[in-house]
Length: 44
Image (tube, rainbow, N blue to C red; front, side, top):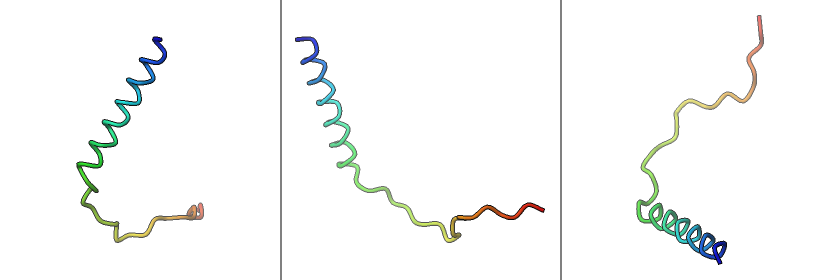
């Protein structure tokens, strides 16, 4: 019984987090003008 209560509590918390993030919407931001380095620079 305790396991069932813990599972229901965890599910309720997870659902509350998802609904909170959904209510906040997408963050306003942009992309960086500089490209990411994908290779390791040569060592001298």
